[in-house]
Length: 426
Image (cartoon, rainbow, N blue to C red; front, side, top):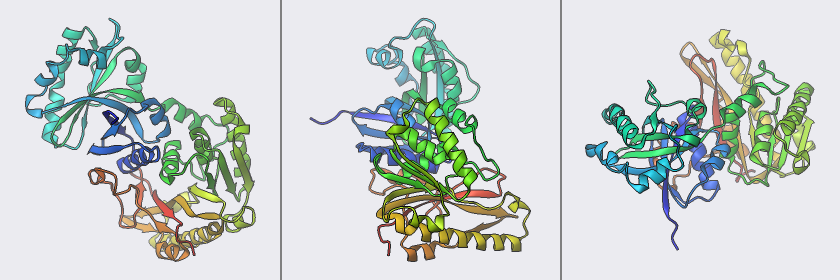
């Protein structure tokens, strides 16, 4: 018997390319049968065969701010009248108003789903009519908001998922999609484990937990496979691996203070999240990456996720000559790290890793080591398989080097994210 089809939307976080790659790769890893219907820098809409547990999925993803289910799509020329005609139907009431109370509230968010600006603008200006009609007909109170997108923390604080609903409108290339939000990113938990853990080292750099989780997902490995972070620092990648349910985890760092910090942070994590440490095979030890093969069995690691040393914070004060010298030092360091890691990796291993990119006086400096890495047996990979139905709609911002840049305006050092595969190690 064929499975029923459903449509879902994902509201994207920082860096839409990484977010879309995260979502698509997790759906593929979970063996979901899906196709991409619409994609923009704000939202991704997919169709699936079979229902999705959105609350479980949003805790696996590092990217989605909200997930919701599509009620129906409508022709733009008759909108919103074609929607309003259905608001008193049983289908609409069961989808949006089931178990709502007289004190329930609703809000409206409008997203660009891949259509043009004029369509988005018309959709936004249709909201007062929709809100007034729903207010009158359903007796659910309208929560006004001055922007077209309601922040997730407002949806959370006003308990719209429990006692009301968030109506989502998205203008696609040819249709308008109407849906409701069913799951929110746990922003409080991310903040808690980012800022409240006992050991932090802002001087050596702190990768955001959401980005760490995205990179883990991009590795595409199963929960019983072995992950290694050879530059574990204060343990961000390791903590996200634990929370995602990966059981075989290795962390190494040449700095003994980092190892001590990682152990304290992970003990805190197990305590705060009520996890049993005995359920995990966890190895944390001091080691220089260049001699790591002397401490781990040959071809024993399925995936590496890591952010190595990205260079000195004072680099923004460098002259171009000093920057070229620093880039040469970092290139040598990264090559020696890959050489040291090569013996411990399985032949089908994934390496999801960050390279530094420097911007100095409108000039960019990056590590020119890709050809040498290919000679070592490390090949840059696509972030999304082109075989996925609708993959072309994603419009990912991929560099000619097959990487994605993660940056914030005004930063001197940005993160360049690569996925390498080792299927052709020599």
